[in-house]
Length: 166
Image 1 (cartoon, one colour):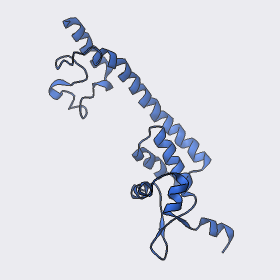
Image 2 (cartoon, helix red, strand yellow; image 1 turned 60 degrees about the vertical axis):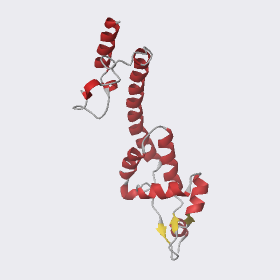
Image 3 (cartoon, rainbow, N blue to C red; image 1 turned 60 degrees about the horizontal axis):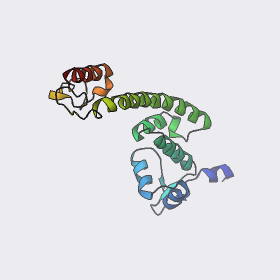
């Protein structure tokens, strides 16, 4: 066997990977069930990992710290050929994709921040005019739950209505 073949053999135990990646063993099992990482079984039916799993876990953890959901990370990692470990170039592509998602989340959070003062800050909690409440579930046709924050013009109209009433 060549040195490169030996390096590519799955030799790390689940405990070794957990310690080196600073995650719980149960986290590794969870990642595996989600298809984010892959293990092999040795002759004793114990999980073994290739060393490159550490880079994959690092990408998962970095994505999570940025607020990227595991399903989004799974989708992104799933686009790699043969589920291989991300390279530096892959990371650059993933980060550009994730930056676009983060920009959307930031824009959403900024809309929420602007509304908090006018809605929750007013203290009205009015079922008639509060844009956060979605009276009679009129948004149900468009989305799940009270999601008027996605349409700031409706929220502003409701707030303006409240302001006129008071």
